[in-house]
Image: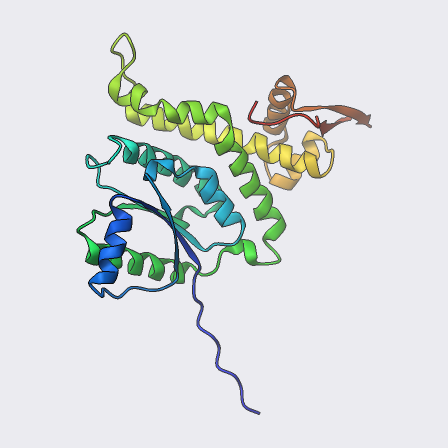
Length: 266
């Protein structure tokens, strides 16, 4: 019996390229016949700052193995500071994806219109990195439900007005200063942001679980392997935000359900 040779894993990679520099660099790589893997599917945007974190989450949820964002070099943005905004959003996304061990599947880099060979090298190295990581774990049947819930929770976090407002003001808070010329230390701001992202991630994950099935804080704590007291505190925050409400009492445990019109972004 002749066995068919195993097909080599070929990662699926999505790349967001800014129109003015990185896309032109990709074009130059083609004109210069610079060789690089063909695993990448390109979406061209006017600016890397227009890459919404939700776009990246949607790609990962749908099974894309890696997402690459390429823009102009810092200081060379066609729209003045769009790539600084891209960097801030990328760092936030990288931090929150650590909660599900998928932060290595995204990357950000800068390519000018004259760097065709450099563009080819970036694509090659990122493809090799994703090949070593293997397929997106969400495609595995054993991981799909749990990881899908977590990624959906992350998507709700990065969609929320609370987080978007904070990220949108990061440069003002840490670099430019407020009307009193006061700035916050960048390390202190990042530590605060990490705490906020983690808290919002847990709250949104609770919401996702309750959306699937009304539950008590104890049941959710067991599912997520967290301290029941901490989970109950998050329940109270969600209740104050009018996102969940008490459905019934079973024994000594209050059972909560999602409020149909409730959205974590409110």
